[in-house]
Image 1 (tube, rainbow, N blue to C red):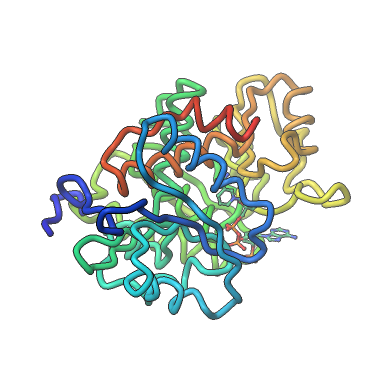
Image 2: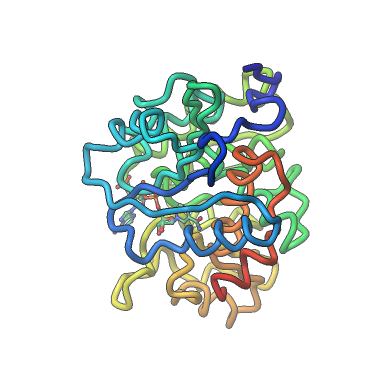
Length: 297
Ligand code: NAP
């Protein structure tokens, strides 16, 4: 197996199951409502690939063992979702540079007995922003509200794409840690570019001084959640992206829309991070529109 300079595997993968259907899947908990089987199976069928995608309910703490089991069970690709993104990293033999920098894996590829971990979340967000909103990220003042797994990967990919990122988070330590990870990434050859990442004292400060706002906390998933920041800060020059996709329109997005801001929910990121996983596993360009209509979003 050879790795390219960008850390991606070169060439087409070897089918995991000799002479039979190649198996991929997702691990997580809860997993019952995962859209991944529907969107990946639709993509495999559309391209006539003899692959199938399953979902496994894996208990917290068992992510590393589940990744290791890929070799025994002849599983070619694994998507990894909460709460396993950190544990899964320990089950990998090799890591893509982004996954190593972020300390989290959302995709594993098995090639010739080697398990390689990737993190496609941030690249998925950037691809969605470009494809669906036509945004030019270079030099764009950007607030990332939230510094958990999604916020960190978003901040890293946005800064790598040239955005001037301000991270705001409830706990200052997590925001500082995210900015440090991104700063270190930007200082490497892989991440070098015109972008930057710093910590804001508050979400209000970050939002008020940005054009693009990425909402990366879970606030808004439940009807009675408080808003992550005061929408009165928003104007018609803001672009507000909420990484939540269920509900499709959070209270924040509704408020942003009513103030004239452009808005998008997390469906684009979901689809494009999956499309990147599809490419890693199969070597094929994912049919994103087919995946989108399969999940009805
Ligand atoms: P996570 O790692 O648990 O991080 C959660 C973040 O939200 C942390 O920064 C946390 O701050 C903050 N937070 C949590 N509760 C809060 C509250 N009550 N008030 C203020 N801040 C709060 O979660 P994650 O994986 O980053 O996911 C975050 C969101 O992104 C979720 O809604 C998830 O569904 C969504 N997401 C979407 C996609 C997609 O493809 N669209 C992908 C991944 C995640 P502290 O550090 O202070 O705890």
